[in-house]
Image 1 (spheres, rainbow, N blue to C red):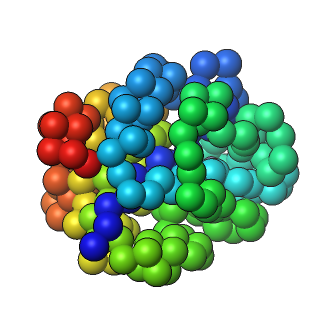
Image 2 (spheres, rainbow, N blue to C red):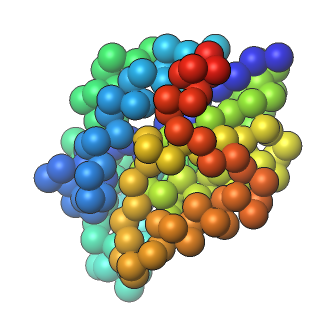
Length: 187
Ligand code: VGL
Ligand code: ZN
């Protein structure tokens, strides 16, 4: 059995200077890089939208235009250059896809099972959207799921959204852990 690190949407548009900047989003770089060495596999997801995605303010949705396919904003954060990624999984690629969960209309669950992965640790951006949805789906798919609380950051559109998301993930069966405890345990 194997362990995988799932790095959710660590992309330019969600970090400093990006279109949908997550406060302190860059600060997950250090724990994410440290953790990547401890896992059998690392998978990265990308928010990967068409120019007319339904979540964009220009289309009546809640978000500024972000992570448009093929743009600089949609590229992985520069810190990801130091990490060996097994496969990149793109989500939200069609206009009406919600695109929050890395498992939505993707092959992620199959890619993990093909490699005998039974345990996953979830890190990335943003706690209250894509990390939340991905961790809940990972637990539902039957993976032993941990969320690394110091390697995620929240948008917090409403104060407390990040904290509520942690509670939702815990209720769905995910363990809330720190990167230090995972590194000490060897992944
Ligand atoms: C995300 C808002 C819109 C995320 C993606 O990656 O958490 N949040 N699209
Ligand atoms: Zn998005």
